[in-house]
Length: 145
Image (tube, rainbow, N blue to C red; front, side, top):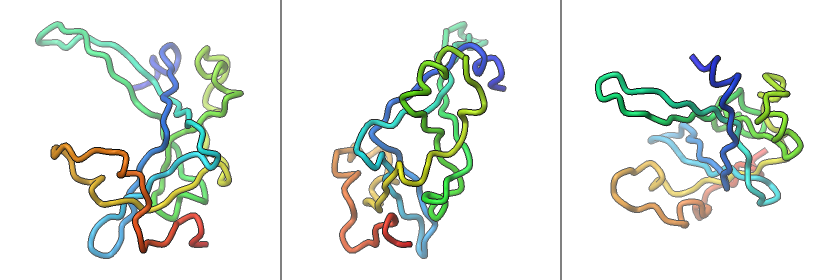
């Protein structure tokens, strides 16, 4: 499905972090995961354009590449986005490097903490910077081991 995009239309999606949900008693607890040093994460991605058959409209799409979770994040989810180091940006974008870059990030490159379950609520316009603030009274997953 993504073979053509993997060969010709790669991208890097910058992100301050990402959310994953952990199954807990009574539902799911969202966690925010970000770079341990507070820098921007570089997520490996692919993009493409295609024509919608009925309207003929050109549609642009993108996907984030995921891999098996590292030991640090596996306690909350079995997969994670592929995070590229600065040194891998050019090789990824030009196609000089391939699947060898599609691996889990080192455990010490990330930090995570539980956040408000409002993250699970969509369509209510409640998105704001507080959605990445640690939830009081929760155990920090980074120090749970």
